[in-house]
Length: 540
Ligand SMILES: Cc1cc2nc3c(=O)[nH]c(=O)nc-3n(C[C@H](O)[C@H](O)[C@H](O)COP(=O)(O)O)c2cc1C
Image (cartoon, rainbow, N blue to C red; front, top):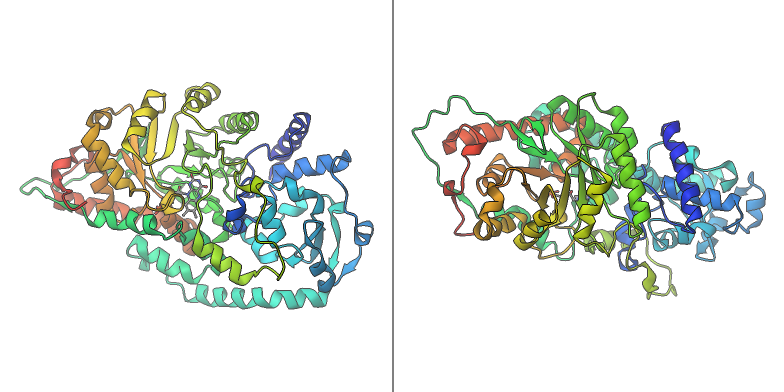
């Protein structure tokens, strides 16, 4: 993190303190969400110890001011103590909560209720060595850069480290072997191949986090299969010697009508995290939208990007608008090209497969109460009080910057988004991770086309679609129905997981090739020739 960012964080911490607030105050690099719902505690376990930099800065400030109780243990008074695993294990409750990361033991007792990712995730992993989980999310050096030495209460004794590392070593060994066997990126033929091979080189937690959908995963599956129910009515005898896949996305030139959807915690897949995508986007010219809870901060991405490269920024509105304001202003200051307000996460979806996996790996001890306090159901990071008025408010803070409403699931809300001043919408169900059984976004687009076709003709208001898009033909179907461009989430994560920025480049090449071939076979040479008449949607 740059010294500029550090200064910003401490300033933010002080300001938040003056508001008597204890929550995170700005976008942070560590991908930690705000307090997750109790029922979703495990859902956020990827973010566990997503000890946000902002949150930590604030915590440290409060500790220094004596506003948060200092660690009460004997060990806390002797930072050089050697702590046995058995001792660590005893501190597994709200009353006394320790964790070990990289052999250092931290007492987080005073931090529990200030953890932006919620208290439950800390409690679930209390008394444990969480090194691999923590490292999967955070870049090296995060703790050293953001915690003071006094926050360490001791070292885990070396024998205990060896024991607790055994499980991680086995997984690391498997991944190392799988990486050795990984094909060169030129062997990748379709975007689905990225997923197939990335699975082998991911640890189980990361795989579950990336791939899971909500509840029964019906929405997740249907996002993809809905495209299989749309067929083409190709036109022939058209000169298709030259085809052009270029377009503009929110005023930014793009070689294909595809952008990178914002996805959190990319560093779980590979150490560069979202920076690998930034590099791949630079060399191919596509637009990257950085998640608000990415593993890399907007500051880092903006200092990595090429001079003329544009990066959009996704916003999870903070329940506390003064904090949201600070975050938006900071993104504007950094030069975010557009702001994508995600509106489908007033509460986090229940991602059962991930929760079950986590429960199996981390069973709750006998006697641990199953009912949890209701206070964690809503999260500070995911505002439950969003209304259409927020669009004008964001625009007032970010003059001249396009504001996109991401996560629209009914055509009526597209109309409202436009009426309320949004520049664009994304028809999306968050990749099937939020409301299960939410319509596939392509179905929502079809309904928009049926009910409000004029909106789709107004090129000053763009309609994007994401979810389940894996083939050039999927993209063409969406564009035939009036979408301006589409977003891809998981394919870019998986491409970067296996092959870093080369994977991202290859994904764009594959999409471009598939688009060119299918456009020729469909009888069109430019994207603006794509039209509803080229589709048969009777099976949708
Ligand atoms: C692992 C993962 C993390 C995501 N994180 C975010 C996020 O931080 N913000 C957001 O607006 N959407 C997020 N999304 C949703 C994506 O932006 C996008 O809507 C979705 O991935 C599209 O579906 P696809 O993965 O099938 O392409 C995430 C999706 C995945 C798979």
